Image (cartoon, rainbow over the protein chains, first blue to last red):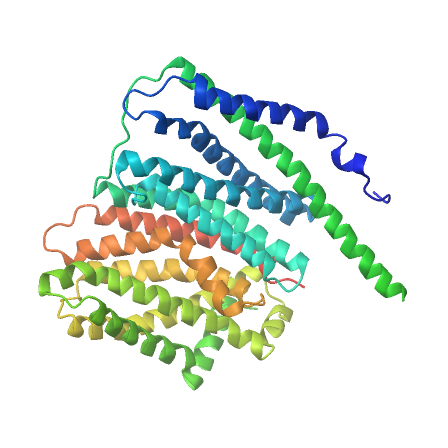
Length: 233
Length: 224
């Protein structure tokens, strides 16, 4: 803990996983864009789903981790859990943004609009706003421990609130039926690509988390050292 | 010694007394609400049928924003005059403080609504005194107060206290806004209004969850 961060610290444990994940990314691109069969009704546009679905999955996973991290932080007050929740919220917000963007790109040719108030879309947007607020409340706090507490409260409340948001929106939209996603059997090779992509993005999330948590803890340590230095003078 | 409710009511009573002397919160919410309704009137210059369609939406947008304004005041006042520290020094459970402030906010919002609803009814030429509309208004206001009090206590302690509350509050109360608009629409429409009770239940669930969670986490909001 006392020694400084070296290049080896930063890349040591993660290097193997990083290399593996990079290879998986390339493979996922190949599988999704070239290898997977073209969908009969939607054509090539459907291929975006191999990225869209994993991104959405990682977002939910990330926000679940925020919830768990927030709970344990309030209970134990360990900085590590706060760093975990914070990192996960950041990654979750970025991934949710990408979910909304890739969804829009798909919706334009298929539904004919960039945006529609479809239940899932609307719920995702509200969820995105809740976690943006999570990041904002942290950055506008007067000190970092206060920000951590406030954010943890929102991390818990927000996660509990999302199912209610989803329920309300589903009930609301059933009054005005929206566009329907074409249904049908899914080719096994498509499922394989989807699961491969899911694994790739989940590992990517884990790697990002490792890096971000480490960075956060290093930032905290730096603040501490600066403070000690000031006290010393 | 007073029990839990005695203490919570004492805090609410303190707020009511302070408000009775300054009339800051209720008056500003009231004027603001009427302004919003008037602005909406320009935005949707519409026929009678269209008015009936947009009325529930206008009503709840008004109450949402007025609520944000008022609930922010309720903690800004405490903070500015150092009262919050005093309140925290009292030998009280944080849950009691939460409940007291929440009751105060609830009462002030209801007070504003009691005045705004008739004005709204006259300006939009709508019969708003349906018992079912009153019921949904009371419940949704309670839901706003449960979440709003928690977030107002957070917002007031941040550097950006004036715009932090809407950012925290509005996404979280989306279920209440949807349910209140839909149920009000059903209450105002002629006929049995199927689905009204489901919306009501959704709001009740929200209230129960937020009361329980806020009660538990409030000690982490008011700390040090």
